[in-house]
Image 1: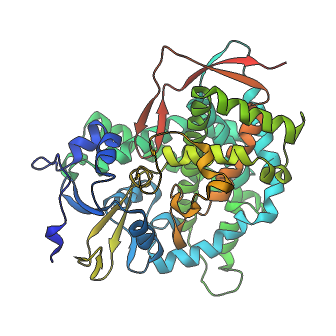
Image 2: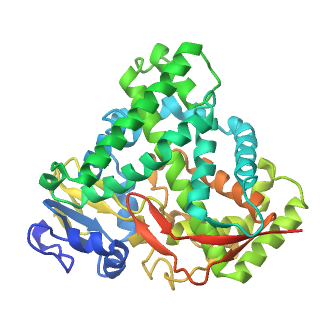
Image 3: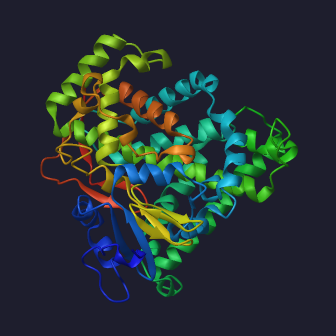
Length: 447
């Protein structure tokens, strides 16, 4: 059997392949392929990929990172933003070394301090809200997550200066990356208005990153945050001496990728979770009742998180239906096989958590929002939730992101009623991050 016998997904056209379908309505395209088989050929312009549509096969690819390493058209374009030396685009061996290097910034010992920062920054954003205000949840959550990211990962900096200069550019970059993935590369080189906006946003972001790194160096700060860890490694290498010092380029690339990831992905997940709560008054009521019992009117602490079980189920279900990073690629490093099909070295493998979460055999009634599927008695396999990836390259910030989401909800839900705008239909905006478009709510203060 040859790799050409893998069935091709419907809807391909000459030159563009499936790019047109992905640009018009990517989620519809992915839903249409979710239950079509284990493997499908999907063409992203000139890039020929093998889409993995079976959850167990996907976990196999994630788990075996020596055979299926980071790479493919998505990661080639991400390097335009993050550079070539960030952990997210490194090959397997370099990634493992860098991950050990930055792991101290995500150690559980730091979470009590992170908890305080998260709660304070949610309160800062909520202080600007007033009874009767109509807000865009995604835009407001980006303010929260940008401030939290800056004050936990780069805690020496003041957030206002950076947010004012980077919020719009980060949106331009995230939207631009997705368009460039599914567009023929020749078109990406043309001096169109969109390409020029993307390039200018990239350049401005690099200037801000330079400023952050230079400020840390000039003041010699060491607060145990991500940038402090990186700058220490720049001088000394890993604490155990197994790796050499990292370079100035390494530091800049890591700062860029963590800043973008901290701001956009968690903001999208928070906005989707609140949107789903507004759509479902019974679920909203159960979350608020749980918070009333567990918190009894006080601010949450890290110790409260395990007791907010139903809230955790709601977050898990929101991540299932709306995984923020919804499209990934890998490269086969050697000749191998998947589902009995030979896969040649150099083949691009397409993985979509969104597609995999739509499988009816993994999630009965996959299109419905059902937090109870994550209850202990339901015995839903947690490994089937692939919103943060899986295996040795699972997102290093997964625990931090869920902690931030839980704490933000624990401040907002007991304080404000979020009334949906029934005249506005919330839609998915599938750029690099899967975010809600027009997720508006009217605020009503409780008590």
